[in-house]
Image (cartoon, rainbow, N blue to C red; front, top):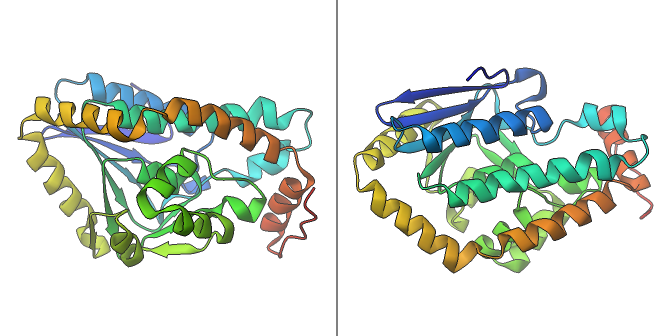
Length: 265
């Protein structure tokens, strides 16, 4: 399959999906979301792939949403309903797909994992982080709420109070803190990130993958069976936020590199 925004390769039983669109720091726009969904489908169906590694090229794993696109279109009628809600739905569907895949998905994060990129990483089965990795629920800076299943995953992983702190402040969570909170399996120097993640993935690829698939099904029934219901509520709330004056002010302030002046409307 011909991808323009990511790369797909298989190495010793491991499908490697690399987000690779430098102009937007691998932002999760509609095009990236579509290609990532296709790549995950390809990995699931690929008999040569027994495990999956998801990573990002360049100086960030994923910069979150494409703010310039949002700014260019936010004044359009029903922008929330026509653009933001479908994108939020597609991104949440990707996380649900990862949870329902029969193959284990390992995420390797270097640099920033912001907004949807943060929750995409958290949605994987294992996360390896470089020492320079930062995880940010950056939505609040542009007056949005967490999407990409963040509101479902983070409270269950870190507890409701820690989760709300991350959502409300948008503060960066370092790789070490992410390790302590259980978001991350291992923190390594940046140059060791892919070798470590690949070694783990290759080891799993040689294991009882049918049993791994059963374990993932068990985990889904135990923890994630309400994801679809939550996804619909998340999309509706994000659509509402994307229609506010605060959202338009947030993206304008971000691009102008100044503090936003929110009014609560």
